[in-house]
Length: 220
Image (tube, helix red, strand yellow):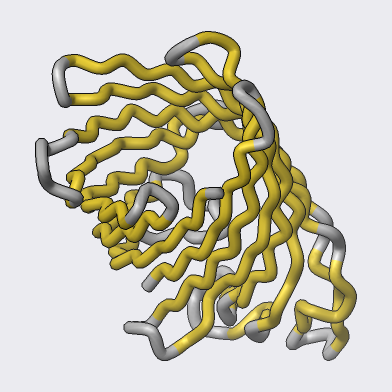
């Protein structure tokens, strides 16, 4: 499950400021997977074209890992589950057009993520010693295409999008299908289904996953 809570403040005709937090679970909601909090600023360049920048602090529950020796029988190294931090920065450029009541949008986002080194997280079974999880940084280009439809006299607006995560090759694809509900223009509730397919084994979430997401955003 994904739970999202956010707020957006219109500072002027051109500028918006936003904050958001997310809680993610796994194992059919039995295990906390990740918590994050972010802040972003958005600037309207012209009608239908916006630029934004943001920072997100992530606190991850990393899964237990056990590696085997070349005989695939004897244990080599063990990494118990642990909580760790990551820092994420992004810069985006997005545009959208209306075709009747259908809205089509495209967003390109550069994303940089840094994971600090953490001491005593890996255990060498032969040497009986602990070692650190090394620091790691990663650059990605995230390309998202979205369609949404505004039904007349109805507050439920369906949407669907596809997002590609591109490093040196496509590492991950994310598909969302859901509906937005707007209440008095200030309150936006969303319910959606997400399928995430992973192509790159080195990704932190290195398996295909299915999510149901709930979110709320307050605009003022």
